[in-house]
Length: 491
Image (cartoon, rainbow, N blue to C red; front, side):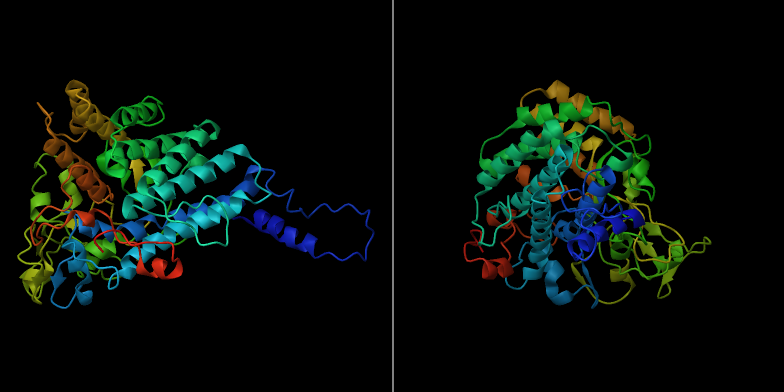
């Protein structure tokens, strides 16, 4: 918010407190009444800016939940990351509503606090602009979509109320999200980039609808793959986006320039922090590799099976950091006199203190790690939706509808861009694996595994888990606040 907007906002309160000791006919030029505020785009941006800023917490609220999938693991290394076995419970699908309430209450609170903020602005008399109202409703629909995906039977908060809201079924919430997006689509802008970057527009709405329809069978019991194809067509045929020639340009510290990004959260290491994946995944001594101001925490990595699913010539495999590590001058590093070599293999979930445990696991380097950065946060914007997903969603939906030729075209278009040979044929397992390679650590994996019926399967260090784990528990803290909320079955 710039100084002009601050002055205008303060003027509202100044006007409301003016006493009648002056000429009542005097014209006031530097103050704005509440009804007059919001008459131009700058004023509207001042009203909705904080709401969009809160979207920047997407990474912070989603990254831990990814540990429930086969692409992310946080093993115990000596006493590090023990945390009362919290990470082990997440990975092995043994979380419980009481002990792990904070894990789930965080995303729930973030979702509904933002919905509340949006609802308060929607009744703000200063907001009359149809496009702004459509943006706010689309963003509210996005948050409800996240809630139904994570928790199932949730709250539909479509207005401001002092009453405890009712709990709705997953199909009811699905219908609400669909209806809201379809209603606001005509009023949303088609513009992308510039002032519209990081905001709701027609293409983002089509993307949310595509996700909704692709997962409709999970959410409602009725598949809607044909509708998913239509939504993906709208994005691909819009001509507003193109695949980046450099896969990693989507994730570098200036990735706002990527032509592939449909929705990202604008972040900045000093002005709007919140992105610190390098701290979560890198080894303590990786501080010397990148000459960064803080020693990383040596936590997140991927499993050897997931790492090995990438072909050697696949450019995407470079998202994983393995092998000998060096300091910024090129000198080989060691860990307690053992060469600092990251190994894809993780010998056990709980490893004793020492170099073997500290060096186990391929680390995530998909997002550029900024060298010479004195801050714990980075400048990379976190990508929520990008064009490659529209192609692979359309390809999957076409395959499920029986159009295998069309599906192959979409998947091979992406693979060619990633320097790997085209597929000769597709199966559901092939499709799931390719989505994993393309979207690793973009927080698509849980949803994908559930849609393919694989989320609760056994994997390294994890036994098969019951199907009720496909939903996270309704946070115990929320049930205590709202007696109308009932816990999900199984918990």
